[in-house]
Length: 607
Image (cartoon, rainbow, N blue to C red; front, side, top):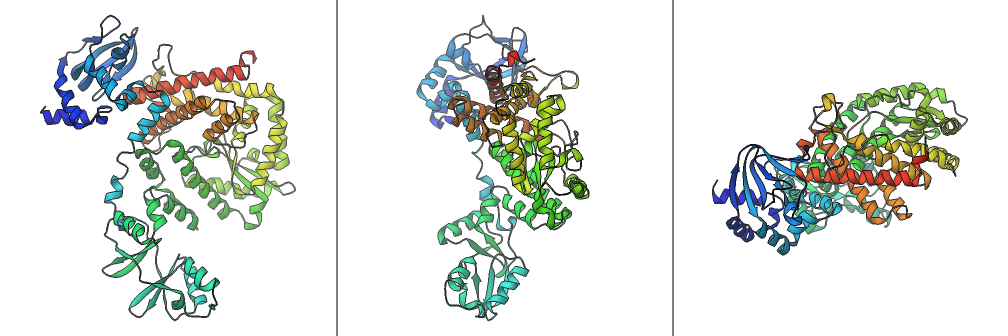
């Protein structure tokens, strides 16, 4: 490997990429390249660490008392803690022949002292480490922005009218074509009529709707070639302070580029997907609008967008789909007499990719609930066609149990709280996350108010509900390793059972106790912090831990073959060292939260 290649490799490894070029060159004069055969012990409780190792090729295992803790591969480094603190409980042994850089202890400690960002990487707390890792994932965010072209974005079809056409007729033609603006032909020039023109030159003036449209048009349009770069479109929007550009091809107008569409394009076509859903008039059109949703998730996560923001966006788009299907299958006269609700991750606004349907219908008291059955059966069938799988527990509007009047749901709530069997606890938990996506949301509000009132002073029931958060062990051993599954999952662990469920369910019950209306887990944590249930630091740690668990889960879901049902299993060997460290820290916070729940709800006394 040449010196140039060594330098390039080192500068590509975090946190050495935080150092300047001259510092890297100085560092290279202090480093050696070493080779170690398989089974060599590099560091151990009785073998003092003298260097920081940076792997070029090979694999190193870290064990504590014979139990595997970490696996280090190409571009990983170890063991900074041994150098900083002067001792270790771990043994680092070569699993595959090793070629590595060795940075001696003294220059490494000097770096920690001289370069704050380098020091922070090795000594920062969980929250800072998590946030810095996310920031690094943003570094290449502008790359697609610089190379994308205008013809890759959604362009609005222009509505052309003659300058002498009466304003009211031009507006009618605009509406018929579902256009956003009007382009006005006046001889050899073209003008534009927007909402601003209509407001300022028609509504706020003495103009009549029978006057020629050309009299209120703005001429001197700003245009861009459809083959040009979107970055240049952004420059034109900024320079001229306009909201629209005329797109031309060989001097012919082919469309209108809206500033909002440009910005949405770099949020990965979100606006286009939403607009397509709104305009859909059939299930086939909805299917077309939904096909790019997985690409949207992949693209946003690859840019380092936090998973909780991605999930909110996806949940909003899914809610639009639910609302559109609701409008398609149900007669308009029935729309305001019921409420279509979603529950589970969809209700919490935490849906990433489509999981099982969890939906229900609340019908206004006095209405015939059974008359909704054929419409709701069709609704579930349509959702299935759109890629929303049927719920294994049959929590769907086609099931009469989840199709009821307001009084019917109040009766269910009473039954759930009186019996406290497994089915009742599940029903309560599901309903606590309910969110209205179509119809009259006040019907759900009425049911939730009753639920809150019914739990007033019922600490016994809340304790039984909260105990479920402890149902699954956190997959972290006493000495800091991962506890893996059995049989076909012997190299993996269930990240949902091991961590996500405890946070979601524990926060859900605390929110019930403190009458918090939010259904989103992160928003619930923030509100609990505002009420003084958590201090700010622990609330922040809990949010970051939850974000870490969801992010790693999503990464493995996206890596699976389409149609796979194994959405919760994680193989820690496929994670980078930084990700494994973050995951361990997240599980430690889950354990701390479980202890909090045990103390808060006196769970040691619950049978």
